[in-house]
Length: 224
Image 1 (cartoon, helix red, strand yellow):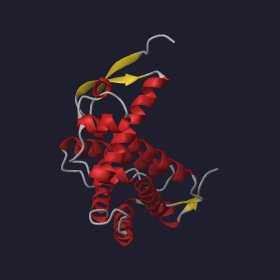
Image 2 (cartoon, rainbow, N blue to C red):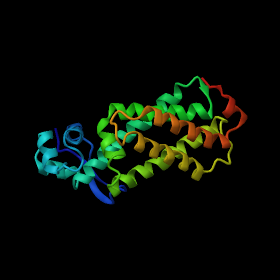
Image 3 (cartoon, one colour):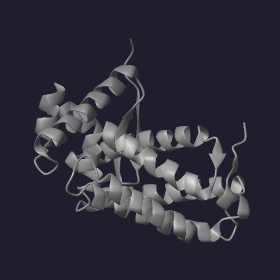
């Protein structure tokens, strides 16, 4: 095989250049690094994480880690990004499976999707919900919230559930409220406080139903 080809890209979440692998062997190495970081977060917590410990757990030289990540923070952001991408896929899959569409159903489905990923990726709970003291992780999460809000707003308007006067700012506020609900629900319990999440769903639904169409309130069959 020829030499591995990699490209330099700017990661706006950290404002630095890192190397992104295009060859399968390099991609496997990056995944091994992220998996190792995930294991260490669960074993020792975010604050105890070091690049040397990550490389040792992944079975790669520290120099190999630095080919792709500038520091521990970059690894954490990449891990959060991987899990957020999985979350986006889960939200899309669950929305596509709804038989009846309504504002209440949209909120419940999206919140349940997040819980599904939190259960599957407990390290994400530590990094994102409990690690928000890290400014870079917080910025990364807030940017993701904006994208989630835009996608859900577009979905609601496109399917006739929400009126067009549902502004981007209002949709973002609802998502930020949900984000804070999750922080509180997982603050003391790694399994999450289901009752608190349910209360958050009620609160978000009541707020967004102010912008609902009659169909969005009553529910309509999902298009097939």
